[in-house]
Length: 118
Image (cartoon, rainbow, N blue to C red; front, side):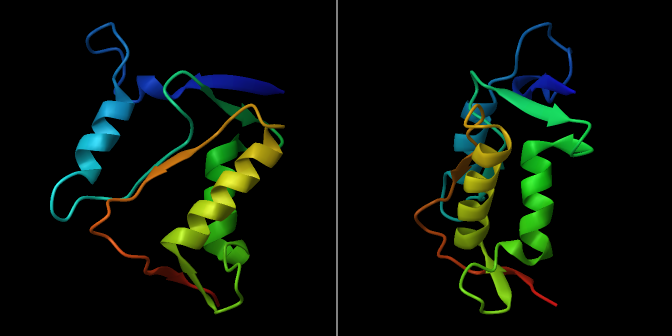
C-alpha cells in the first residue's frame, strides 16, 4: 500500500497554507558556511511511502546509504557526494521514477566523509 505525503507540510498546519520548503532549503544552504540540504522530493511532488518499506522512499534510501550502500567506491566511508548519488538513484528506483529527491550543496562546501562503513 502506497500513500503520498506532501513534503511541503513539514511545519504543520500553523498558517493553513503550504510551507515553501524549496525557499527554506535555498536559505539554509546560502551564505559563507551554509548547510547541505537533502529533500525527499521537489515542492510540487509527493513523497511516497509504502508499508513494504516501513517509511518513505527517501528515508529508506537514506538509511540504506548510511548503513554502507552509499560506499560506491569501496573506500570504507560514505561522503556527501556518494550519499547524494545513492539516494537519488535509489528513490527513483523505489518509486519507478515518480519521486526525485533534491540536494543543495553550497559551493563553499567541499565533499567530505559523513559516515564510516563498519
